[in-house]
Length: 151
Image 1 (cartoon, one colour):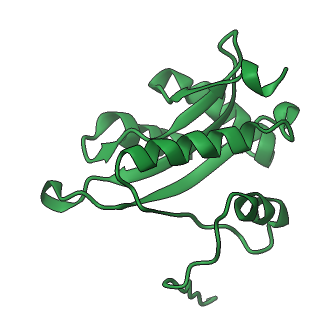
Image 2: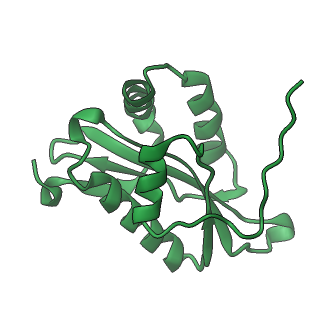
């Protein structure tokens, strides 16, 4: 397998099982309810433009995905910011450039839609994900501070 055999395309509703399977392999926890909610928003509402992508082998096997949201805004007023909320690459295909390829296609797709800024959240203790986003030119936000309180 090399990067040139991987095709990036818009996510389809039929990709649900593959996305849930990859997420389960990466996190070692099954979250089908989370993805049911995500796919419901992506494919059954008109408030969001399609921005989520999958990476697939020549045979159609999905090996990675990136999910984001570009909200159309109130009263159809376009917003220039998008959110990247989930990314995953099958562990058998990690460290082969697929995550970077997904990210580049995702950014190009959003840029073509007029997006100027992308936001995402990362657990500060997840050094692998922090490194991945840093390598893809994400930096800590200067405008948002996440506050919490334990009860």
